[in-house]
Length: 77
Image 1 (cartoon, helix red, strand yellow):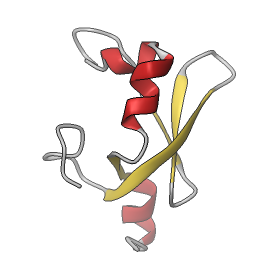
Image 2 (cartoon, helix red, strand yellow; image 1 turned 30 degrees about the vertical axis):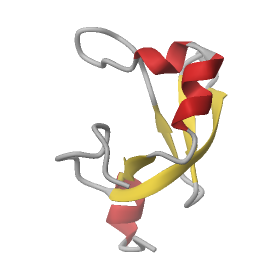
Image 3 (spheres, helix red, strand yellow; image 1 turned 180 degrees about the vertical axis):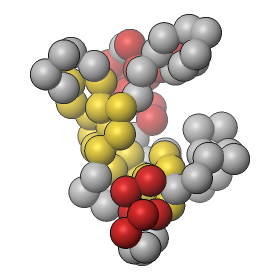
């Protein structure tokens, strides 16, 4: 699924399957491929207001993010 978060960003699109916080309290998206990606809301650099609420994160489950780790490994499946 193409969406505003994958448009024009390098990486293999992977669905979000969950979220967790890292050691510093930052939100991280768990991707279907097994990799993870930080999802920060730090305006004006990162505009992701959905990440600050449980409802917002829940709505993003199944949406895709570009996985640069998959792109680097060449396994876009």
